[in-house]
Amino acid sequence: MQILGVIPARLASTRLPDKVLRDIAGKPLVVRVYEAAKRCPQLTDVVIATDAQVVVDACRRFGADAMMTSPRHQSGSDRLFEVLEARPADVYVNIQGDEPLLRPEHVSALVDPFLAGGGEIQVTTLKVAISDEEAADPNVVKVITDTSGRAIYFSRLPIPYDRDGRGVQRFKHQGLYAYRRDALAKFHSLEATPLQLTECLEQLKLLENGMPIHVYETPFDTVGVDTEQDLERVRRIFEGMTA
Image (cartoon, rainbow, N blue to C red; front, side, top):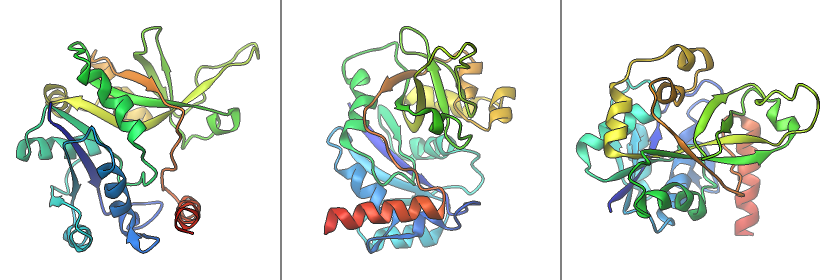
């Protein structure tokens, strides 16, 4: 089975300008993500998909495979579809361009269901247990699932709502996905949906169109780089790794 890791790397970023090019221990953030993905043995290959030649040039200086894609894509998964048209594979793994702490265990959890022959599985993603404090943060996307592990809903609110204060474990959605080729093509063909636009979460488009997303729990959290504080935290982690 051919499994392609794709790192969407849009240059524009509102909260952290040019974040994919920000330096982490001597290399651009997106190159750190690429190097982490290359350490995942389940991936047949890895490519960075960007909308800016300056990103392509920066990646290639460090030996990272990068390709230009359209600046008009509305989501990272739409950018994946353009890669699909150029690079054939059976499964495409969407690796966010701001996740330098990606681990092989993350990719294993995403792709093992496909390797096991689960033909009914079309899309997979991950969740990790979080504290009540994290759950209250609207920048942290939460997910709830049914008894078979399929996503019921994703939200920026702390779902489920604990009405009687009984105590509940909430889960953060980790923004990593794996798609079968046909599922990724269908995602791209769908129009934006009301819940997707309301929550600003692309995965809701799949749920609103009746496409199941299988969610697997991981004990390994990541640090997505969205702010200067996130960037400094990741820099300190890398400094500790190289000390």
